[in-house]
Length: 441
Image 1 (cartoon, one colour):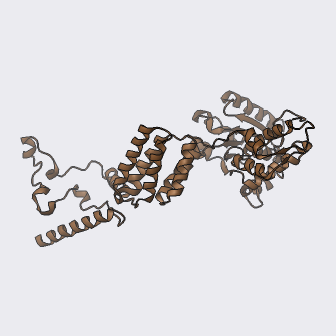
Image 2: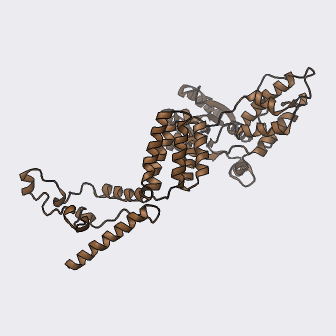
Image 3: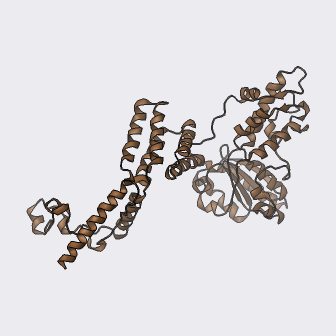
C-alpha cells in the first residue's frame, strides 16, 4: 500500500487539537473538570488511568500544548532516575532563562518501584515540573501514597463504539494523514467487526484497519477503490485475544463480576464471567479457590454441601484436565449460583474475630480446662465441668465463654435453605436452657 510515510496509521492520526480528540466527554465537556482547568490555564499534576488505546498519551500532549508547556516524554520501561535528573536540570534552565514550564509525561508509571516514584516527589511539590502519569493499573495499588496525594486521578474510559466508528471514518476519508487517497470503503459487516474487536481501543482499531487496507489494496492492480470485507478483516487480524492482564485491574474486575453474579443467584451471568476468565487464560485453580471461598462466605450453612461440591469440582478438574475439567467447574458455579444464600457464617466469624482482637488473651474458665495431671486437678482445672452426653437432650446449662464475653451470640442463622433447620434447633435449645434457668431461680 502506497503512503507518503512509513509512520503507522495510528500515529499519523493522533489528534493535534482538542477538537480532534474523540471520547472522554466526562472530562472534557463544558463544565467538566479538565475543561474548567484548561479554561483557567491551570494544569495540576495528573494521573491518567485507563485501558490501552483510550487516549492517555494524546491527551497529555494536548494538555501540555494548550498550557504552553514544554512536553517531555519519559518511559518507565526505558528510563530511570539518571534520566530524570537530566530532565530536572533542563527544566530549571528553562525557567531561569524565562522559558516555558515543563510537563513531564511518564508512560506506564506503575512500572516504577517505590524508590523511583519517590524521586518525582520534591520536583512535583516545588512546582518545577507538572507530572502527568499514565497507567492501565489501579493507581491506589500501584502509585505510592505521597505521590498520589499530590496528583489528581482522572479515569479515562474505553472508547464507545460510536466514537470508534467516527475514528475509523476519519481514517478512511483523511487524505493528508489517513487512507483517503486510496478511496477505500469498508462494508457494514467488516466495519462492525473492526469496531467490536477493537474492544474500546483506538490504536487496535487503526492497526487492524491498516492491515486490512493493505490486504485489500494489494488485490487491486490500480491500487484504489478497494473494498474491505469481513473476510479481509478476519484474514488481517487472524484472532484477537481477549484483553486481560492476570495481574492487573481487569483481573479483579472479572473475578468481582463472577463473585457478585454467584451471590446474586444469576447462573447465566456467572457462567459468562467464568468463561471469559478461562478463555483469557485465568488459572482454573484460582477460579476454583474463589468458588470454595464463596461456598463458605455466601452460601454457608444454607447449603452445607456447597463446599464439598466445589472441592469435588477442583478434584475433577485435576483428574480430567482441560477442556473436559472445565465442565466440572461450570457445574460447581451453577450449583453455587442456584443454592440458597447466607452470609451468617461470614458475619459470625467476623464478630468473633473482632472480640478476639479486642479482648486479647482472656483466660479459659477453669471448668473448661483439661486436667491431665494431679497438680492441675488441685488447681481446679476441669472442676464442675458438665459432660453434655450425660444430660437430657445433650444440653447443659454451662458457660463456655470467658466471663467478660458471657452470653455473646455471634451466629444468627437465616431462614434460607438448611440454615432454617439450624435456626429452629438453636431457638429450641435456647428456650429449653432459659426454662431451666428460670426453674432454678
